[in-house]
Amino acid sequence: MSHPFLALRRHFLLASLASAFPLTGQPKAPRVTTRQASILAAKQAIEQECRLAANGDWNKWHESSKPYRQALLQVYDDAVANQLPARSIPGEKMGFIFWNSDKARMAHAGSALAITASGDSLPAYIAGDRLLPISKSIVEWLRPQGIDLIFVPVPTVVQTYPEELVADPSLLPKDNNVIPHLRRKLLTLLENDLEVIDLYPEFMQLRQTEKRPLYIAADKHWTERPQRRAAELIAARIARYPWAKAAMAKPPLFRQAEERFTETMGFADYLPDNTRRLSELQTKTTYWNNSATGPQPLSVQSATSPVLVTGDSFVNYSYPLSGGLVGHLAREINQPVSVAQISGSIVQTFQDMFRDPEMLKGKKVIVWIMNYDPFACNWMLPEKFNVPRPKP
Image (tube, rainbow, N blue to C red):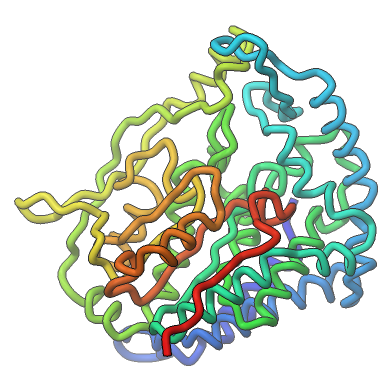
């Protein structure tokens, strides 16, 4: 189903970049947008979504998803009540939601809480958010050090394919958007001067154009195609810096080559034999690997890079580093990228930076990757988050 806000979102983005491209003559390099222009364009796009869906009434827009949220909550309860046993760990069980149209694909039941846990009161949900104060304190700590923070929340399968998770698709809102509460949370971050790359509309567009699903079979993580798209969008932001423009103007350091690959199935241990075999067939694919163009080997990762990508397992999972988000970003900005990742943790890498300032030596930009589950529900986000005091 096509989202009506996609066309308007494109309108805002094109309008903000219109002056960057000449109408006649030879093409020129686009004028790089500023951080504030990026924040403003993202704010306007989300606000326009609400105007289209509910005449600008956020509570009304949130209310439109209530029938779907109630149905999904029942699906969640059923999954928890009928948990599947693990093969290799006796006594361990987990609940899963299987996609209606493809039983070889599944979502962890807990991911449904990213949609259902918002409750009926949008103001109460927003008021209880922990991410805003944490992210603001991180930005305020980084700014005196000359480091920008770009937040990149990654939608998961439950937000991207909502019609697959309930038996009655008519329960979906007319705009097919079941996460107005998360759109409002993103807007709140932008209103507080946090730079956000909004992947949700991009994913809703990709799901219409890509033949392969955007998520690995029997796993919660994203496939390579959406990682490539995210890398392109991140690179477009980083391109505004003079040092990045200089690197991107040089001869390419990396080239792409298509290679065969079998994706990881994190939930394979819980699958019956027939479902497991079908899932395994769907994980056999190809991906674009990024390698050095010259005769000497060159890694896409370097601790001395001015760009640090940090966050949870969505930073790098299943694919080789050279073929996932990091590899594609390194190729896009034409320089290696520094990486600090801890699977399952949201703020631990920042706490490591507090203890070890050497991690930030030479850094200019931190890209913070977080999947939508903890972004939506506050889990893994501490109630108290102590940031070091700035040095006098």
